[in-house]
Image 1 (cartoon, rainbow, N blue to C red):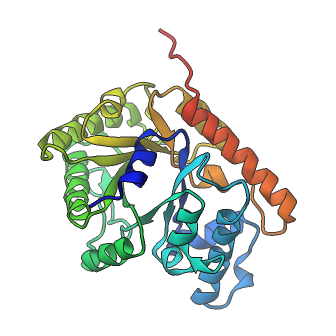
Image 2 (image 1 turned 120 degrees about the vertical axis):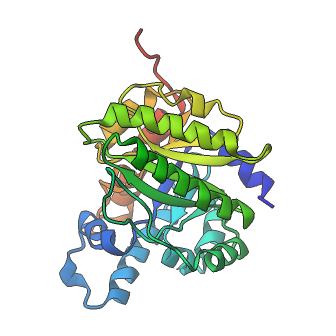
Length: 301
């Protein structure tokens, strides 16, 4: 059964969810953005040690608390790591931040304008382990590149199938069918995605809820029916390649949607910064993203 205190915080809290879940292939890019070049490590373990040190610095920063950061999505290795002498989920909970874990194993090659998730035969074991560590929920990502109805329907069906597996394990799934914001058919893909998500939500048993992590729509307010749907605990948005300022402007135009940013949150942080500089840069990012998540702008008629 879901932790009800965490569930209420995610459902009703004024804040956003930090995405600290860069994995395998994206780790070198994340480290480079942080000012650590590939020559700084010689083994995969050393590379993961460096990214864990970055995440530990973020989680233990005085500005990273549950006052504005409702939750944080972790990579599996980060979940199993230690922050401030505690396993990472426990360290987050102590700071008032609800822990989630990324569970997908990457993407298949594109077909029908989309990229499905790769098979994940070890998922049940991972879910049981995560729950035992106090993790509240999960996140799984697919990608939509074109407005192909068959492809989008397949993405959403797969997402909800995995989501049901997560629910059965006593965790809250964040379903993430990301629409590529550079798609030439972005607006059309958004509209088809909305229809397919609504079909799958309506098919869920009464009383069950999921979360949704979506690209900010080309048409502000398009996802209002999802925000208001009784089977959706919360809708969160990825930055998807927008700069932080761009993402925050778009986010503020969408009622009821809060951020779950990764690059847009971490972009100004550098390994070489003093703690004072680091905390100031992180605090500025947190404040800007929090404001866009909680102070919405009216949409022009």
